[in-house]
Length: 381
Image (cartoon, rainbow, N blue to C red):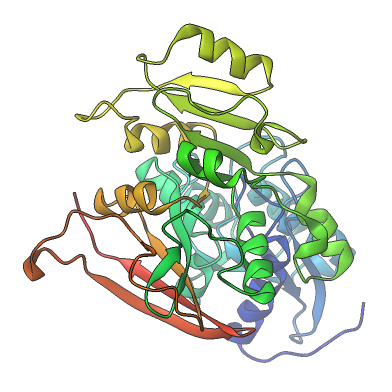
C-alpha cells in the first residue's frame, strides 16, 4: 500500500472512521470498526476494517496489512479491541502478541462482554492506552449496536414520504411515486443498513410491497451494491389477526419474513402463512388487543437486530411514534400537492397544542428533486 504521513491523532482517527464506514451495509449484527497502524515516524503501515460477521475484525486486518511493521507501532481503532472469543479470537490479545506499543481508541465497547476489559488487557501487557478520541463521531458509526447493548432494544428509524402539504397518499390509498427516483434510491440504502424492516398488514394488503434490498436501485458502485444486497434484512409484518395474504410479495424471494401476531389469530391462518414460507410468532397484545410494539422490538433485539426501519402506513407509523419507540424520523418531502382529502403522514390522537410531540431536526438536504428531513425524537411513554 502507499505510505502516507499523518500528524495528528484526530486525523488518523478520522481515517479509521472512514474505513469503518466501508462496512456500513455488511457487518450486522457486529459493529462497524476501522483501524489504522502507524510506525514511530507517523507513517501509516497498516489499515483494516471489519467487513462482515464471522470474518476478521478491523484490528486483525490492519495487523495483517502491517506485518512486521506492527511491532512498536501505534494503533488507532474506532472501538475498544474485544477481549472475548466469539466467532473470531480476541483482538486485544492479537495486539499484545503483535508487540504494538500504543493503542488509541475512539470509544469504549458497550458490549457487557467487553466493557473496558479489552483496554485493561492492553494495559496489563504494558501497552500505552489513550482515548477516547473523536468519541461522538465513533459512536455515530454504530447507534443501533450501542442501543442494543445498553438498553436491549434496536435503534428505530421511521421512514415516510409526503407532499408539500403533508400528505402521503390519496384518500383511495393510491401512493405510488410520491417521491422521486433519488429518494427511492436513498430508501434502498436505508434498507441495506437495517437488520429488519417493519410494516403493517394494511400496507401489505394495500400496496403489496417486497420490502427487499435491490442492488440495481441503490445508486452505488456495483460491487458495493451487490455486497449490500447479499444479506437481506428480516421483513416483519405486524398483523394482529393474520390477515396477510398467502400470495403477498413480502412472503416471496430470498429475504426471510416474520409475521408478529396475537393469540387471537386463528390457527388455520397461521398454518396458511407458514406454508407460504413465513415464520409466525405470537407476541403479547396491548390494551387495544393489537400486537404490543415494544414486544416486537424486544424480540428483534434478541435476534441481534441493531437498526430497524419502519416502512408503514400512517396508523402503524403513528403508533410507533406516539409510544415513544422511534429514535429517528426520516421524511422525504416532495414538491407536490395532494390536497386536503389525501391521507396524513401519521395517525396520531393529538387534540391540543400542549400535547404536541417534540422533535429536533438534525439534517435537511436535497435528494434529487425532493428534500430529506432527518429528526430525532424526545418522546417518552
